[in-house]
Length: 330
Image 1 (cartoon, rainbow, N blue to C red):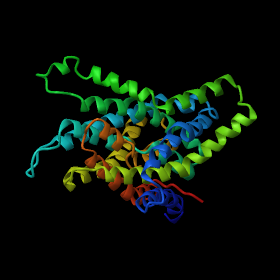
Image 2: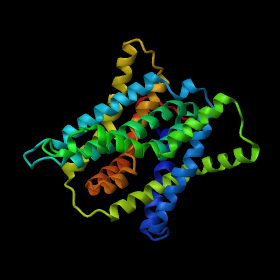
Image 3: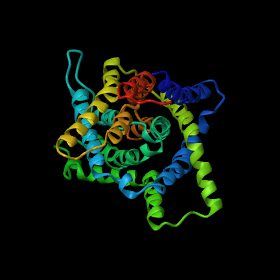
Image 4: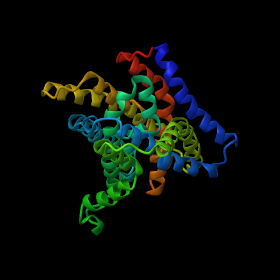
């Protein structure tokens, strides 16, 4: 456990430093969009491009692993929707819009900004292949489905005459504009063609990719602080703590169960690949969901609290799950 904490502590410490830097005024709030843009459009795409161009396509797109991850994400969405919409003695559940974004934040781990560098630090570069498949599913499928569900209206309204298809199409067009899948695809294309980048260009890509880890983790903390400052409503603990716990414990359990079922069906999923998926599911919620919820007019206060609680608890829960599954970092 001590060896695992030695790897995980710096990652979560950088998140805390980003939070404190903005809180104490060392980093102005106006700089946060710039940091986020640098990571999303420059540093992370370069890191993903390098991994996409350094391994065979079959390691990037494994249909069985994608099915396990996608099926688990769908079950997480359904389960969290039911949890959020249920009536309790304390009162009715949240609205459909808020429940849909709660489902997104429960099913969408922080794979890009945190998971990629953390799991590579724990498990080595070979964990990149399974992770890339997870990122593609999260960006293209999960982050399109949940905003589409958030836009559903009562059946009596004409806006629903096309059901889920129209809002899903709009959300999918937004997801496709994300640069990360394109960076992966471009890297895979370069690998398939076998055409190396010119030396100076390769150096630029390497330098930007190397900057992704510290800047991304620092940015998570800064984004969390910003999201907290723009919260205008008070959210009862019962509306956000259960979803955070579902994210940290139910999600990895569902992924593990999916791997067990796949192996029972003869899919022959390797222990290592399944471990990568389980640890990815054990990550805290993606911080950018709070920005997306605010854009769609959902209760970003609830979403922010889910992200913050899951991030704070994940330092212990993620390390414990890694230890239980026998991760050894020498």
